[in-house]
Image (tube, rainbow, N blue to C red; front, side, top):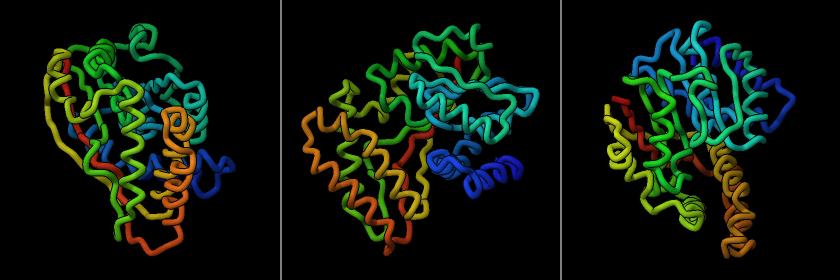
Length: 276
């Protein structure tokens, strides 16, 4: 983020009245550097039009808004009405005047209705939930102009998030999440297979890279714990004992009390594609 955008995020984290929005903006700030580097590598410039597919409660909207400038535009899309409400609150709090957020299914969106086609589409923690990555990539490609970019930041199953010293609950939590994804119909190894899915979708690979981010234990453990907590109902319905879920959440949150130097995100695949 630029100094101005980063300053807006920091001010809201410190002074905002919405505790959940403050937490989400903190998470966004942690991942902003990786997004900015990828967008810069793709040549994102003022005046571009960009879409964040499955943006969730904030996604990369702040980074994209700053990089495309007042003459550009950013659209965030998510199927969850609650996530869209949160993202709109974040955009308003950060005064992202070139950004709008809409509710919708990526597979059914009309690019013309959204003001497309776009110069760039971005996903983070989105394709990991898709049962047919090829189908979803084709849907995203329809939103992008010929020669446009699709940048994917999606987490690998292995290695799981880590800490120093290592907290075993991180591996248990990550394994539980992937068990739920498979029960929901997501094929095992879907993220690892994204380069092949992209080829099958008719897209060209510009680069394949990867990264993880080290964060402060208090925030990072809470992010992991709240992610599992959000999946608790689905886990119990899928046959995982409620007590097992609660014990893992408690172990993750107990890590915030101290004794850890850092906690990592999962390892992300950084995949950049071009539409012919």
